[in-house]
Length: 122
Image 1: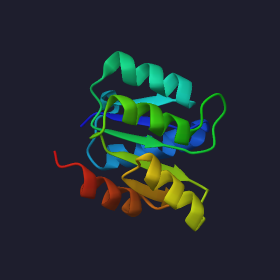
Image 2: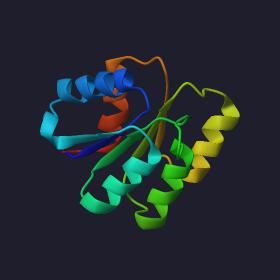
Image 3: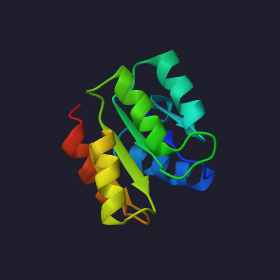
Image 4: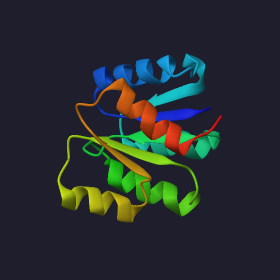
């Protein structure tokens, strides 16, 4: 399973990376990006991700803009928004933009595992 982790916080990227490794994903099977611009570039260059895990609030290109870009190129890849934005309006906005699931920070490894298990088999 190839995963793209997008968050402007290096600490949060490390936490998410540790969780996906606990789930059996090898370190070489996930890439990290500090904002949507870097993530979009990686997505276009590699074009082999099985799932995208993205924050919402980031500089340069936020997670919502990234989701919209990805959806223009790929309608089927699972995208999970991981954010502090937990309001009902934000969740609805993200779902309308094309995210498959939504996790509010802080979250547990178990929550991320459940969301990923529901999206990706393999």
